[in-house]
Image (cartoon, rainbow, N blue to C red; front, top):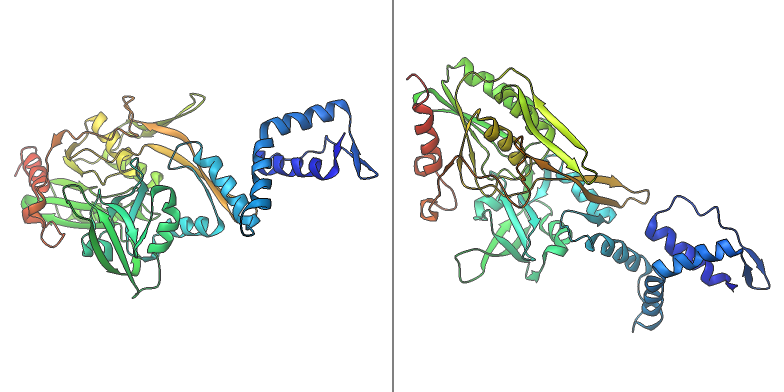
Length: 404
């Protein structure tokens, strides 16, 4: 026999934490302020208490003893976030409504902010995967590998990344100060950046020397594949004999778009496969049609996720030459689910493997030809084509393969 209040509270805690569909199998009968339950029901309550009793007690202690009243909603949100933090995976998290909405905005290819893609770093810092082309962040000099330590003078860590991302966004024309830690620099670097409308044009193309085409893919969004096909067709009509595809500082995006582009480039075979915790595999394959000219892929430490998936298939199939430096190393899949109250969750459910079974996550992809870039080659944060040793190597490789 237990008090009605405690019984009800235990049931509520259980429902919050376990997200059980119902507890309809339990019934209670109030009598003079008491609840009488069967032995089986009492055993079920005891199991709940053993599993979640400490959480209930700690929450109650905070609510009764913290020196000022606590916000119950914030306390519950903290509990949910702690559940995901316990996984130890920086890519899995509980999202408030505001954080979930921010994530959805970022997938639409247009938002207001500084134009930078970040991830939680293993060292506890917010890691810049890559600045987006032609955005305030890139023009200010933010680089791949920078670690954001402060925004407008306030310190942020990897476990506050969602809050930090929200802080970097804002109305066009407003100012934000980003403080970063950069490898090789003794002092922190401070950048004053004016926010703008960030609209990602994901494809750029050109014809370089000796009839060699060039396509830059800045990220993989909903129209990237169609834009790639259109640009490739235009280049082919102009008689290109080779092709360079630039995935440097491409942080990824929609995997399906990268798979469709890989299918245009490769012959018949596996592009990539996934495997979940049960060992279930799903294979993504390319058909027999493929581009009929030699091509090279440029990658670096800012090439992540969908960029690496495309690169992995091309490297293992030998259909193109990979040039540059080792990629970022993000080869896992997140499932994003909205909740009824407007919040959401993001959970890693599987990981990607190259066709030959190589792990991508936390490892990255080693290029066929490694070419480093000296920082001295950058002019005001921009690497011009005439100073680009990776691009020059790709041109050299392709010239050896084509009939000039």
